[in-house]
Length: 428
Ligand SMILES: [Zn+2]
Ligand SMILES: [Zn+2]
Image (cartoon, rainbow, N blue to C red; front, side, top):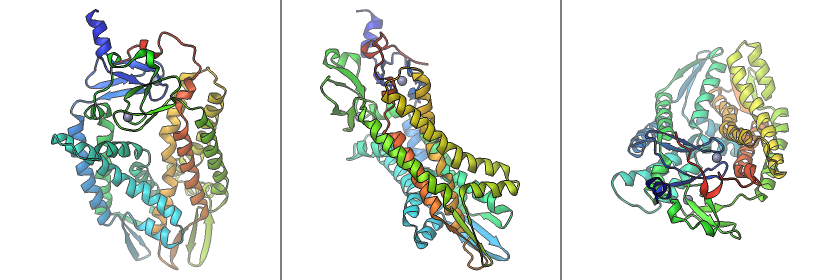
């Protein structure tokens, strides 16, 4: 056996999360990214020293996030009267106004999930720096990964900017220490997330399988969705427990298409009331004016606030419609096992995954507006049923895209030399 053959057998075997192709990672660029040879998705991001950096950044982000929650976030002044709000004020106001579902969604996405993600990551990675093993580290790492889409501090910041611009003409706004520390927490957590080499982290809990360690006659190599470990599934086995993280390792399940259709239909059903019912009601000096999503955009245009109108229109109208059409197309083509434009369809799926959470911006804007404009007879903003329906649309679409298995796009492909064990190396 030549040296290059031996290297191939001993190199880590990676399976693409999007198309399911197994490939051998021979050369390790450091730092750099390894791309899938078939669909072009990122297989691995190689960042030396990322675990130590991530622990320090997350620790600092957590301290700043706790500080942000304990200090004034924004001060709002209108006609000589003023009030100060904290991060959780919107949640408290929604709860008081009898909207527990919306209060729950906002508190989860802007408070509980970000905090849980930081704590879980620290629990998983912190002991590694000290050479310790603590119970629940693997579970914490899986939880932190699951929470990535649902912890929405970045979307919340965009909402702060939108709410600020909306109110700036009518009232005075002052940032408090809570807002600055929130910004710091967001920047540090984003930097930690973007530079963490997850593959390196998982390898510390168990080495990645190599070609030499799997039995090619036993079946097809399938990747674990949570940790990326490769397990061989026999022709009759639909799933197995991942030997490294304990999560389920499944082959692509066409039954998932039905579930995704059901969730997508429910999301589309909620989109109608989300657009017809008022999202907020503004009461000023005894006059109540309900406003819908499109009504709000029209008002922003009248006030010549074009950039904010564009942000709101994109996040609340264009993005949901794009997601409905894109997911519908992906589900319909996967159902028929169509082989055309598989790479482009995978790209569409990745786009849907990426933009999904940003539609939440209008929900956070409403939470901020009801917290800030709470001045009794002078001026009050109340959340309407439309925004709950809209939040339901966003969450159901995110669940629909999460329940669709992108590997189904690549099913029924005629076997070629690039599939399975003879997969080629893709590295940059
Ligand atoms: Zn791929
Ligand atoms: Zn796993």
